Image (cartoon, rainbow, N blue to C red; front, side):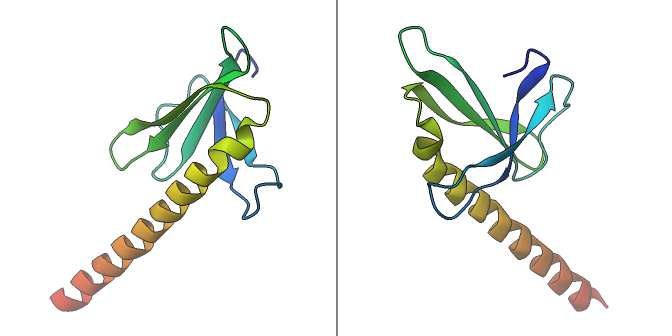
Length: 109
């Protein structure tokens, strides 16, 4: 990772694990993650492989999502299922929230 980056923001997670996870480098100055976005950070593990961490943006804060210590060079395949599930869950929550807000507006009018 570049020294100026705090990690890589997951842009999209493909359906198939053989496809690359698309990311965008995020500068160290990012105030906080947007809702439903995942930030990946990886660095060489002390012994071998990569220490990979993921943070998830929630409505008011961001939280530690997962850690994969000493993951091999194929770590994107390892983290893929978690990233896919979490991004889909956040998408579903966004749709449900919008539907609830619309229902409340219609009920009040």
